[in-house]
Image 1 (cartoon, rainbow, N blue to C red):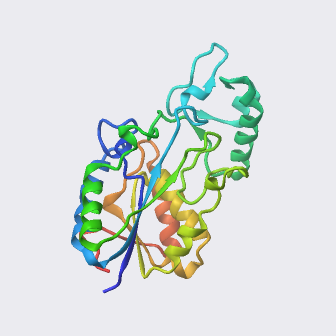
Image 2 (tube, helix red, strand yellow):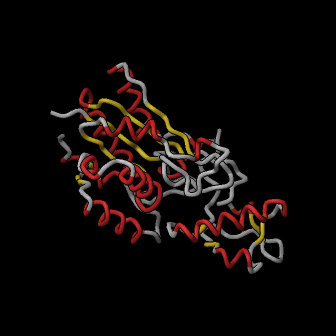
Length: 265
């Protein structure tokens, strides 16, 4: 048997509970299956790393940040392009933020990873929605008690100037904020693992970008140690193709996929 490093992306109430601000359909059942697996593996788990989306209300990807010519905020899931900003369709609520916002959407367009998407305010620091959902929290706490282990909580997203889908680096790193730069510590820990079990929400966004960024800084041989637990992650509705494209891309690079009930490292 091989020991397992768990990397669980954003298993938080706002994603995993149907009263959450950004509930991902199926995430509640994903979390229950993940909890069952953690209990089943027990001593085989070497470490558990849990990432936490951690936002302020004022955030470049929240409605409050932007207004149109009539002073109205964008609806959630509005996509904002560079042309939308430079052409005057959207402007920052605080005029002093305008230049930096233009630089941001320009860089996003250059990176060609995502267009700026306006999300419902979610995982606000200090809120119920920011907490780890009960299924996962209870399971990892039991693991800590039985194995005298310490869950490694990795926060991301508190910088209001950039989206931070990936747990290991922001979409546009801020030179003044080390927390937005590449998380070399986590990558180096995972490189030493025998097996890396991947789970969390959402497959289309935070899971996809976290895994891609780790893989791109990993070396191709290490990608083969990654196992995505397919029944413990779901895509944001409307973005399912992005999740499918991610799976096709990463399995093509050697990542394995497995259902949690069949996972026996």
